[in-house]
Length: 138
Image: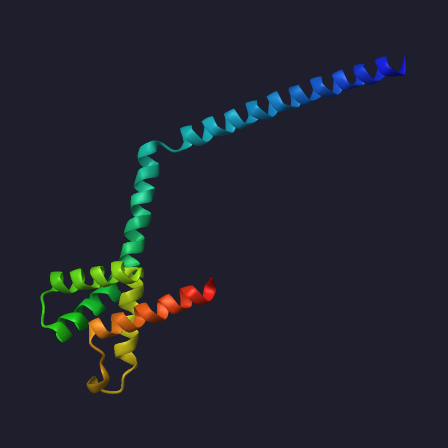
């Protein structure tokens, strides 16, 4: 008799678990439908575009400052300066806005214009120090 009681109790537990699982799935579906009805795909894309624009607006001033520094050092046009920043960024694995911030910081910390490091030399130094930092983390 004990064996039959355990089977019966196990069957009840299984039925309760199945019922609870189905209810949980139904609640999840209802929540998902509410979320989807609440925000259209167009709204989600617009919010995503807004977030990208906000991030770009936050990093743009420092990139523009770095472009000005590169233009003064290299005697080039704005598009050439940005292209140089972009290539150095790709070569060193450092984001453009981080590289730009480093350049601006380096120039602004100098006392006079005589200690300004040319962009190519500064990028090489920064790339080496970043590589050392990466190796040190491993």
